[in-house]
Length: 166
Image (cartoon, rainbow, N blue to C red; front, side, top):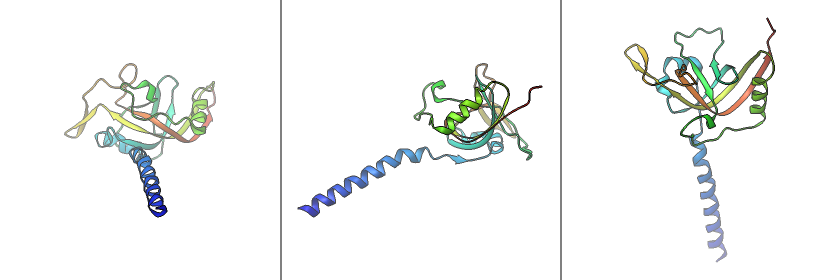
């Protein structure tokens, strides 16, 4: 009887471990560059992405890339917190030490240069039509001026540096 009971417990434990990782699999993000998002936004629409970016702003987060590598395309991207999105996404923002560092840099008095790795769901109102991308929706942000957004799941690898005042 003991071997049968042990096998039952082992099976239940194995099932529980597998079940707990099924939801995490959906949170695995595609590592992309902002240039890839700029060039093919429709390819990543609705998917979890992980991208290195420069972030500016306090009320609306402007996400861009300030690298030396030129990109042949550009779209405006904003970062938003899950609580700002309706309907709410099926994930919550990870509020760990990296997020606190990011938040402190955002709300620090004076201008800041902030680079961070952003992970979240990529949404866009652009669709390809021939060689161009055409806006098929209102856009994101208060005035609908952004072509895309990243609904933040996690922020990591934060680098922040105060900028000199002009």
